Image 1 (cartoon, helix red, strand yellow):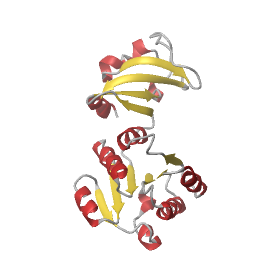
Image 2 (tube, rainbow, N blue to C red; image 1 turned 135 degrees about the horizontal axis):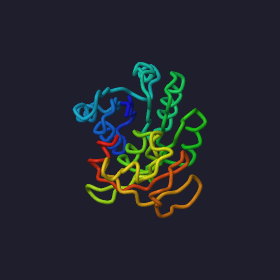
Image 3 (cartoon, helix red, strand yellow; image 1 turned 180 degrees about the horizontal axis):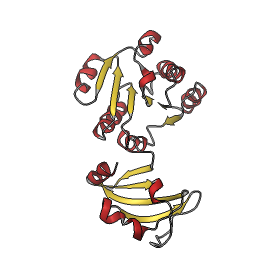
Image 4 (tube, rainbow, N blue to C red; image 1 turned 180 degrees about the vertical axis):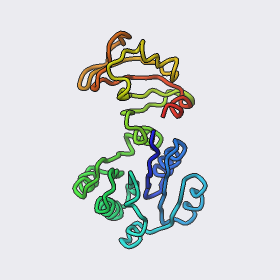
Length: 215
């Protein structure tokens, strides 16, 4: 999987969790916050850490966001800084801009200034969001316990037209396919001789260490 360059702006509990998980998954992660102590604490846990005031247009412009594949604003309690950061990131041509929202009104305003996706922390934790965001194939992620997780996975292009017997995912990746569905349909038991199509999704149980290797 190609390494991504990701900026996380705002380092509350959610932002720190998101940044640390993305970095542990192998991506280049830039973090930004105005709290010098937080930046000092995070500097060894990510690729780079910058102390900057995200309410200040000049300081946000100086971050070099145009070099990022993904920019994530996680200042759920600061609407002005979130709007400013999303707007600047979109102006600089960042392919994917994601924003944390703490209310429906904030969600609506961030969508209006161009956010590609809104994250609601009440529904998604930082680790779960990171797992989804860092893979183009993972559509959902659930932790079962400390070492085991369940993911909703879109088949890789190389898997299309093959059945599960041919793919032998259990042997190759230690993946256990629990169910399958077609987009818009319901989950069903797996027929191992059924050829996978582009609109299929697989429900897979896998150990977290094996998931990292699979990426």
